[in-house]
View 1 (cartoon, rainbow, N blue to C red):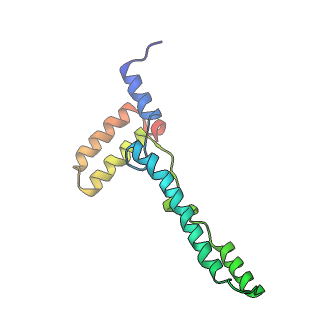
View 2 (cartoon, helix red, strand yellow):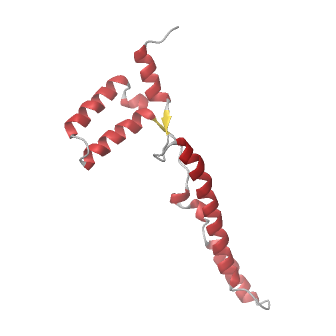
View 3 (cartoon, rainbow, N blue to C red):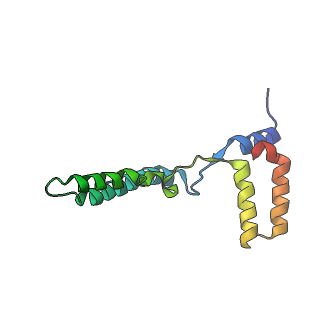
Length: 129
């Protein structure tokens, strides 16, 4: 069964995704591993700094203190800036961008409302977010 161009467009808005990092795909492929490496490096630096205080002869109190501080510190990978977000469906992303541009004054609010209404006719908000 052949689909009409309108059906194809509706499916595209519902199924296609765009990068949540607002960059091109190549930048994401470089940035995601870089963020992971940076978080791991930060964790190693924190551990080295904390464990550096337990140098010298074995002092059970200093060792216990360093171990406790190390165990209670959350890893840098859990920080919200280091989280990886999945790609977003195209329909809701376009709605959000139009509203955001209108709020920032980059786009006339009436124009944004008209474009959102046209987008809603192509893909209903419930189906596309």
